[in-house]
Length: 350
Image (cartoon, rainbow, N blue to C red; front, side):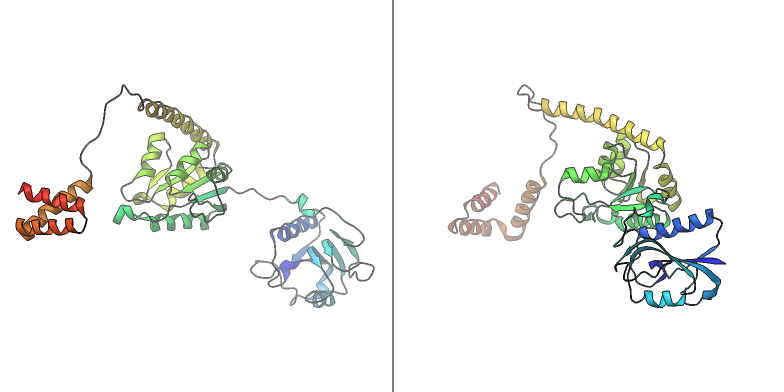
């Protein structure tokens, strides 16, 4: 004879939790260890197992209901009546009614009731740990014009998330506003520092991850490469992909590499290299305030000045010097002295 393992995962729309499924799997593990055969009553979206409503009840000598609250009423009444002939075992349940008034189980190993309290059985559950991955995406950068390929990069990241087992943690580095309830730079960096690794299209997603020795899968969303690519190259980090060269295969290989000790060591190496370089920047910055240093690296003129000059030339070509003089006097009468004086200067030059 078989045992039927049931729980809230056996019913529709019951807000089944990770703890429910861990308790289910642990119960099955205990039955296997004891040499008992069993079926699991699962309801979609949970796959496999049987539908307790359609199985032959007489096939089951024992029925276990595991995990969660348990009270007198539907939908449990139908379930209990269907398997009333079986030996009923309640495991890891929170009994809602006083058990001296209602207890349908032949054996009750409750989590808590009016008579007893025990640790939740998931303390013995063994789950494989999956990587916790920070996902840091840049907003659309219109300043790059047609070179911006953010959707291509985001789609590639979405495919990666969908195809690999991970805990994907969205992290927004923008603070005005922030979409992930982070309020300060310290909170943003603290979140990044706790990730196993980071997938990002942001420069500071790349920099702050490596600063904390966290491997990063960086994607430059600008065709031809821009600041993300240059930053990674500058500090010696190898896992940076220009959007033009993105392939799913390359991202999967990078995903695997980011989980290695080698990647952690490389991230730490890049961190130390970057810190030394930034210390040099600090020293040069301080020396810029030395009064003895009068050197300058300025080149060219501001675009605003060039535009103003070309505009004056346009006025002269369109309305002529006489009309220009009249316009200047009008502006002066309206107290627009600065603009009027400038126009007079242009007239005198011509």
